[in-house]
Image (spheres, rainbow, N blue to C red):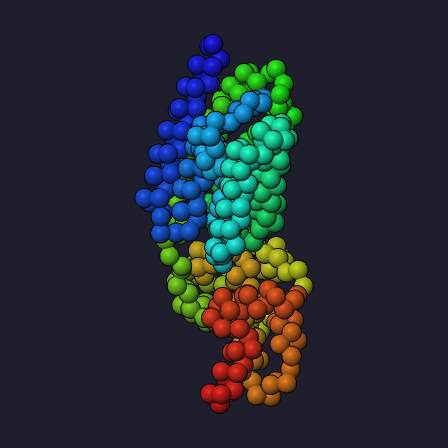
Length: 354
C-alpha cells in the first residue's frame, strides 16, 4: 500500500513538472522547430508517466488506449527532437508525421484489439521493441553528429540530455519486456517512477542552467560569403590572425576538398586546440555546425564550376566530388539547401542568363 501511494505521488509530481516544462518550452521557443518538438516530447513523456506499468498483464481499459498510443509515439518524437536539435539543416517531412501516426496507431490498435486476441505479454514486447528501436536510432545519430557540433553549450548538454533520456527509455523498455507477467511489478513500478522523476528533475535543472539560445536559436545567423567572412569579423588581433590563416586553408589550399577532414585536422594545421577552433568558427564566423562550414565552401566552388561555360560538359557528379563531396545525394541536398535549386537547375539558369 505504501509503495503504491509513493508511486502515485511520484507520477503526479512528474506529470506536473513535465507539463510545466512543456508550456515553458513552447512559450519560450515555440517559433523554433527543436523547441516545438521538445515541448511535444515533454507532453508525450507526461503521458508515459501516467500509464507506465511494469509487469502488468491485465487488459488495458479502452479509455487509456489513446494515452498509451501517445506515450508510444513519443519515441518517434524523441528521435525527431534530437535530429532537430543537433542537425542544422533538418526539416520535418510528411513521412515523419506519417511515421509517428503509424506507431501511435499500431499502439492504439494493439491495446484495443491485438492484446486481447494474441496476449498482453506479446503485445507489450512488440510495442516496447518499436520504442527501443527509435531510442537507439536517436542515440546513434546523436553520437555520430557530435564531433561536428561547434556550440560549446550544446555539446555539453547534448550528452547529458540524450544519455539520461535514452538510459531511462532504454531501461524502461527492457524492464517492460523482461518483467512482463512477473511478481515484482509493484517494486519495479515504484523504482521506475522514482527514476523517471529524477530524470525529469535533472533535465529541468540542466535546462535552467544553460543558455536556451545555444539549444534553440531564435533565428539563423546572418553570415557573409564564406570566402570574404574574415573581412567582416570584429575580433581580437590574435583571433583575426587565426581567422585569416583558416580562410587561407579554405580559399587557397582548399582543405575542404580533403577526404575525412575534421576539425581536429584543421586545428592541427593551425597549431591550436580543437576547442579554440570550434569557438572561433562558432563565435567569430557564426557557424553552429562544422559540416555546414565546410559545405558552404564546397558549394561556393561547385557554383563557380557550374556557371563556367568551359565546364558545361563536365558531369555534375565530377564537380561534386572535386569540391569534396563523396556522393551525389549529399551534394544535391546541400546545394539545394543553400541555393534553393538543384545543381542541374542552377547550371541551366546560368547558361540561360549568359
